[in-house]
Length: 407
Image (cartoon, rainbow, N blue to C red):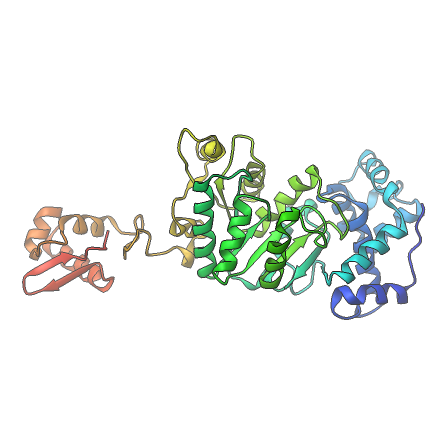
């Protein structure tokens, strides 16, 4: 092998700018530095490396790699075969060069990039759901706390060659989600991604941009100013070390992080073979809720969304309230129609029947409402009381009527 590990003191000094302070002890310095080395050696999502590091720890795994002892250490990782390990060593060996590791660290320090590793307070544990393919570390430009500060996050993705319709939906979704305190996650590409980020920023919200290359270089170059804004109000994130180039393979593996960092994923506009469908596939594999925005049936730009709806059990979403429903629980809104105070699908059957028996133009007495909806008068009285507390109906001496905005 062509690389020797530096002294512990050198490790500490090199890591200090990336951690906001030095490692707590020598063992921590060795662990952190070894993680950095592994991030240079392996491509994102390398499952063999993930299993090996999980079995031995990053420093011991690296030491054995450098000493040539991995081929006889298969027993350390019960589910790693000799063939897998041999192929892994063949992949990693060409990158075992100390200058490449030093360059990645120096570039990160100059760009004021933060190194996050599992166990850090700011580490987004949602990515751990990727198992053996989880990132070994994350390189962050901006506020590292943005990865864990929000109570909810949604990935908004879509085509680079977006139509005006798709960009309009991305703008509305990004702005309103950010306004509700939801972190908007996307990939900083042209088209849907860029519009979602811009809208979240315009609303004063937090957004995360996941890159396929190092966070020290803007990609696409035309989004350099946008990425600066994202870093100032959120974070630009990658598992690829600084200096790393975005490649087609890295874009595909990057998509799994977008899906993992979103509690739900929404595809706003996508062609039949759009890369956004790859993100949707990762979200489905992780068991994350998946939504798709329908478009004109004649639009090739929405063919991928229609495919998700028809073949992959995606939820049809047309409003931000419907997007929020993907999160479930307290995030599901009671204002799901424009100007409405009720929640379609959340009303009980009796409430729906009573509302159907009312009108916003005429007052009706309780017996008349009961006759129209086919319920007992006592039951209608109870339902009307609940609807009144919800603001869906109004009452005076003439009887009851539906508030015009109620469902």
